[in-house]
Image 1 (cartoon, rainbow, N blue to C red):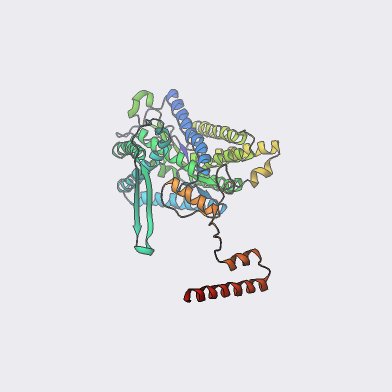
Image 2: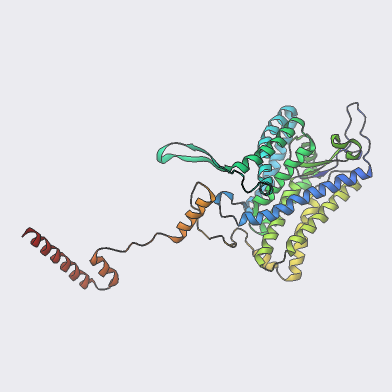
Length: 426
């Protein structure tokens, strides 16, 4: 995971050489201010809209759209897994040719980027389709086995509008694959960030503190303790970071002197901010105090990171400044309002949001959301109890505590049946 804010071509320690061996000309103050301001704005957009969409995601009725919940165990293991991944990438780049590695990674992120960007723009694109648009439904089904042993591997439903979004996203994907242009990189990076904030949910504030605290140590160690993170960030040609050129005013869209911000500095604080928004809604006070506080804390932390990096001319671990701000500010507000207990006892995964039925398990239904909703209603309604047709059964149901009467009734019923048969024989 790339999680450092870097200015790789500004300053003696991080100056890149040109093709003829000379160093790049220093960036102008206007170009630097534009680059830093653009990175800050691009970081805020996926956090804000991703947090809003995370609320709708939590209210979703379709089991296939349920978010991935991060537990405390997942949060504790995450820094270790991220460290192993980062170190593995670093060793790969040291041992093997970067050209072939980046080719494989480009194909991998090409597919993921198209899907992520399509999911991101789909709600916005739906507003532009006319009411009489011929929207047809499609299903991609891939199964394994046959008969009773048949098992679904892929069951993906989509419509014509989704195909249009996929087509537009594919144009961006081809552009990125052929040119590796920084705008295409940022479009994919923003899509990854927004999807991460929307679909990754922390189950409570304590889990968020564990995750952010662990990645705080991870970020500081790999940026200040080694050159691993900065090396991987520079060598890794994939949309895992947002970049913006500092020489845009001089070279236009072909500028190549970039400042960069890792997606980890957006997604990790973003899922914590989204959790606080859902906590605000659970209080039912029609205020978003904790969301706006944490959002302002993120702006403060990232601004402080940029300031420190500009002063010391060295890549900074952004989580070093973001984690204390994003956790500290909301906790101080909770202390002032006397809501610390409510904050830390809030369980995001256990809340019952409006219009969402509580089920002990989700029914396994493949099909449209409408068919899933019908199945859920059937599960809630339960099977209707059939009325017994046998007279003795009716008597038994109405008088369950009188076994003698039940026996007499059965004998009388059998006797009347025998008399009926005798009359028919005569």
